Length: 98
Image (cartoon, rainbow, N blue to C red):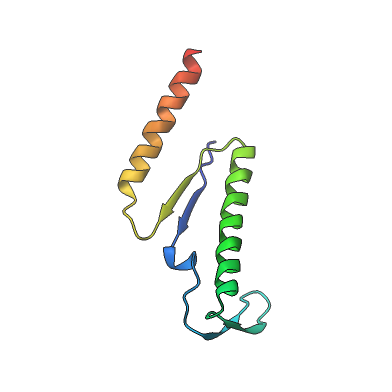
């Protein structure tokens, strides 16, 4: 079996917009919180947190020896998929040659 994790992200999820007070609900607990998205520190911490999650995920995949692919909803997926599998094939061919 071959496992290839594919992460699909939306750029709008990576940065918190400056839209003032927002009431958010935790989908797992149902807890409601009010967040002031106008505060620069809140937006900065949100961006830092999402980047840290991405880096942690990439580190996990690399540690497991998995090839993985990150796609974004603001771009087409066909060309990145083709590039990914071509690069993967090239890497595997080089490993077999050595």
